[in-house]
Amino acid sequence: MSTAVTALARRLVATPSHDDPDAAGALLESWLREHTDATVERDEHGNVIARRGDGDRSLALVGHHDVVPPAPEQRDDGYLVEERDGRLFGRGSADMKGSLAAMACAFRDSDPAGELVFASFVGEERGGIGCRAAIEDGFAPDYAVVGEGSTGYSAPGVTDVAIAHRGRRASTITARGTAAHASEVGAGENAIYRATDAVDVIRDLPAPETTVHGRNVQGSLAVTEIDGGDAWNVIPDRCTVTVDERTVPGERAGLDAVESIEGVTWSVEQDLPPMACEDERFAAVALEIARNVQDGDPEHVVKPHATDAGWLAAEADTRTLVVGAAEPGEAHTAAESVSIPVLERCRRLYRVLAERCP
Image 1: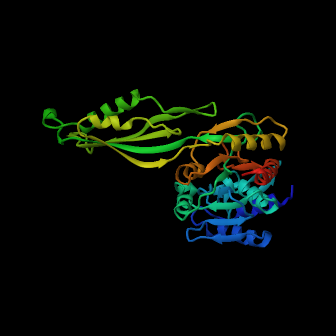
Image 2: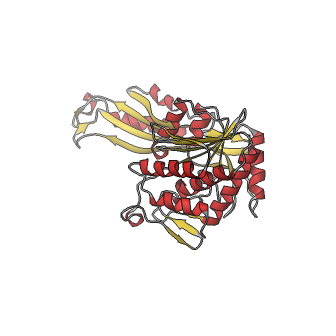
Image 3: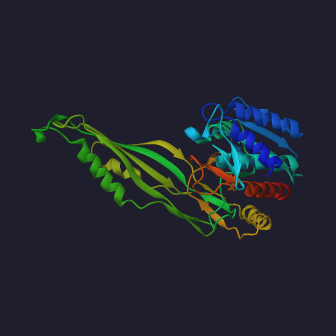
C-alpha cells in the first residue's frame, strides 16, 4: 500500500536514531520544508518544531523520533524496514515513527482552525529530555495530541482516545547499619534487617488510585531489587532496595513512611508524570472524530505507561490527549510493526481534529 504516510514512515523507520537522532530529525526538517509552507526549526536540542496557521489558541501534534536500540534482526547497514500483510515492520514503526508520519501528513494537508504545531522531540526514550527542554524554552501549546499508541485497548483494531495515563516514580531505599563479624551478631546493626522492615512497610501501602472522566486509573507499587552485604561472615552495614511505583494523576504512595525506621532513608531517582485531560470538550470532540473515521466503536481509555503527554500536562499546562496507531505489545519488540490502514486512519483523525480544534 503506497501512500504518502507509508512512504514517509518507511524513510523514518529506515533511519537509525537510537544512539543519535540527528539524521531522523534532519529528514523531518527537510520533509516539512519541502512539503509545507510552515515555519520550521530544528532547535539546539534536536527537536523539530513547525508552525502554520494563526489564532488565539494552538493545537500541537506531538511525537518523538528517537527509538530504543534495535534487535540484531532489525538492522543491517541501517534499520531494516518491510511491508507485508498490511503492516509496516521495523524498529520504531509502532513507537512511534508510523504515527509521526501520519501527523506530518495531517499537518501538511489540514486547514487548521487556529495555530497548528508539529513537534517531534528527541530523548523521549530517555525520560522525555527533548520535550522538557522545549518546555523550558517556552513550548506551551494550549492543546496537544501525542501520537503514542492508543489502538486496541477497548477492542482489537479500534483506535481509542486516551484521556489519561500512568506515570512512573523510581526510588531507592537505603538502609544503613554497623558492620561486625557475623560470629558477634550483637556487635553490629544489620542493614538488611532494617531494609526488610522497610519492605514490610511498602507491602502494606495502598497503591495510588483515582478516576478521570469516570475511568478508573489504578497505580501499582513493587519492590524490584534488593542489594546488601559483602561477605558471608560480615554483618552488612548497608542495603539498598529499589521501588517501582506507577503513579496516577494527583496521587502518590506514601513511601516516605519508611524513613520512620532507624537508619533508613528514601530518595527519588526518576519521576515521570502521569497525565489526565481535564478538558471534557476536547476529549469529547476527539472521540467523536475517532468514531467518524473508523467502523469500530472507540472509547475513552487509560494508558498504562508514561509518555511526553505527562510533561506537557504537568509543566506546560497543556490540555493533552494520546491518540496513535500502535497496539499494546508492539513497542520495543524484535518484531515491532504497525498497521498501515490504521496509520491512514490516524492521519484522517489528526487532520479533522486540527480543523475543528482548538
